[in-house]
Image (cartoon, rainbow, N blue to C red; front, side, top):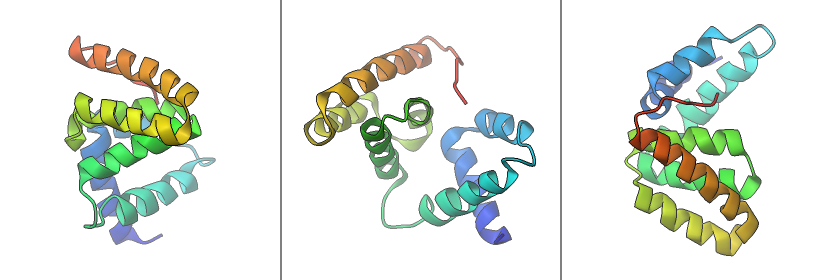
Length: 132
């Protein structure tokens, strides 16, 4: 493990997903998933999310489009919640989902819109109902 990338990744992960989410994930880490958690923290968060080529907002929106297209509901919900920290607005998400409908399909986006409405309503109402 590259400790410098891991530490950089943990800082970015906390910045994007929030301390509460990361603390919960760390608290439930077991020997079975420890290597995987280190891998994603170092590689996704430390190597990719910290690169200078795209803004955090742009990375957030790309991630939302990909999670929608691939049907990864839990990760989609997680990254919709993270828009509170990334600078992506509800209007940005709406535009990304419309764009994604053209290239990934209406059924995927229809479901993503249902998830987004739920998440944004919870955020607006101050709910902390967060998926892992």
